[in-house]
Length: 103
View 1 (tube, rainbow, N blue to C red):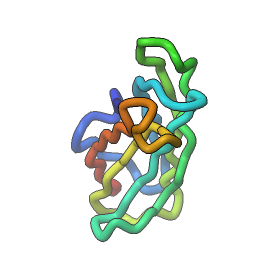
View 2: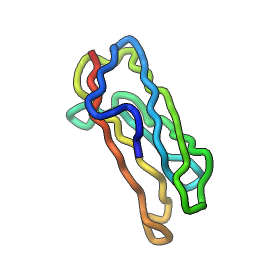
View 3: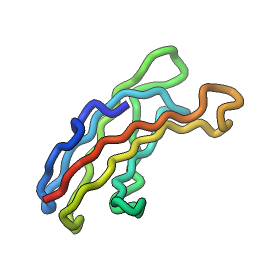
View 4: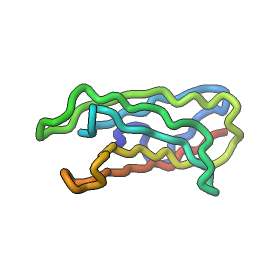
């Protein structure tokens, strides 16, 4: 799950922002992308490296989203856990999103 940024956060197009969250994913990695309204990937995929996995708990992760060259607009930060079995040996993937505004 994404803890930060909160829904509707605004950032400068020449800057960056830190995304944080918690998850439990295969090999302690998930990925995040910044998507335009049409679904085009604008930034990413970025690797969300968690502090552990294979235990019944959520592990923290943190990554930086660089907005250099991203035009002003409304975007969706999408973060997904990994499950190479497609859910046959676990719960499958989890997805969380946040709307962010770049000015």
